[in-house]
Image: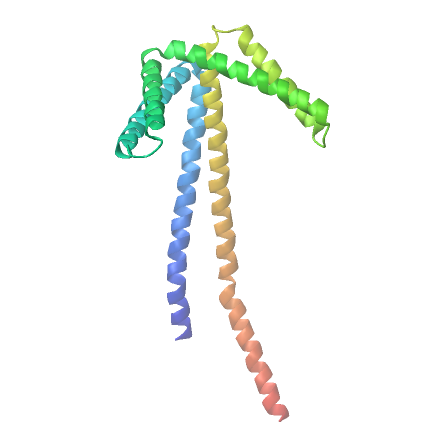
Length: 222
């Protein structure tokens, strides 16, 4: 009866482990797909730039429509007009990006270059003023940001069809690698858990045998 009860208790645990194993496998598979997409995007950076522009435009357009519907539904609130203005700006920006993806890529490339440049300057100046424990790392990051911003600005707008696609592909690549590592790590941990539980019945049998031998010795002494 004890063995039957133990087997009955193990069945739900085994089903849960199979589900977890399947989910970790799907996570790793999704990571592989993202890695492949990132590598393809790095090879065809121009196509990746236009694709990211279209995705960004559709996201703004759909988000603006959803925001406008929500604003109309809550038109009695104090933030009604602010929500309407934000939704209208999103719809207009999405429409412009979808109509002119090349010009939008140029604008976003300029924005990215200025962002890298200003961020690098602030980080560099902050590291020189504060001189904390991470002084060297902050100094290198600031210098790298300034250098990257200057390099993008030096070749703008000719590099606008490659910069956004390269960044987008690198983001896909690193996200995919992290998902692959998480999926494989989860499956490995589940394998270790199964091995530990596999030794459980033997350990229980050994404990029962030790208890019976101790009880027999006590009876013989009495």
